[in-house]
Amino acid sequence: MDALFEQIWSRKVVFFSTFFLIFSLTYLVFLAFDMLPELKNPAIESESNVDTVIQVQTAQEINEIVETVSEAGSDPAPSVVETTPTQAILPVSLFIPKLNRSVSVLNPNSRNVIDLDAALLEGVVRHPDSAALAQEGTVFILGHSSYLPKVFNKNFQAFNGIQNLEWGDKIELLAAETTYIYRVEKVYRAKANDLTVAIAGTEKTLTLATCNSFGSTDDRYIVEAKLIETRNS
Image (tube, rainbow, N blue to C red; front, side):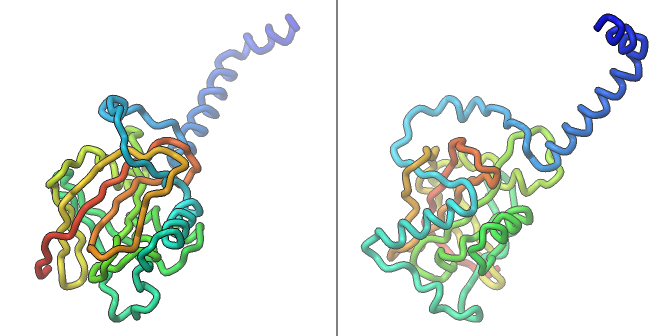
């Protein structure tokens, strides 16, 4: 054992250089895939009262949430399936004035987990079972949030800060010819194991939710908003 230690110590420069190189490469790989632990947000930690809860995590769980609520609700689900692609008005970008942030909105037709997760790497995603912009019901949009100091793909930070929105703040969904303006009604932290995202209804509403495709059980943040105005883009 002493002889082995002496051999390592005699080559300590090579040993520590190799160790540092391997550690740095591992860190960069984890950073590239946003797999490092997230930093705590003091504003988030200070919240204590949450009166409505929901879990939005992997794409598979998102599909299950939408299915469960659609089957359990008394109102029929919005007729997204009955609307042809030429009739549906779909968002192409989302703008939050308070955060001065604009992000692309993806509208995948597939409910496949791999397809939804891939779309989240390119922007935020409107769930294909939720309403289109001109329909009654809820437009349900999901996006990543990450508070790591640096990420290679900025779409991992698409919904950073939405928990700081307040009643009356505006959210704009831009389509090809029309901008749909929503007023924030409610912002809350989401706990696990409860389902409260209803996509059916007689009003035109918007729900934003942070999500995490790596299976984390961390809390999620939900913003509920109501359509108040439309204007030509």
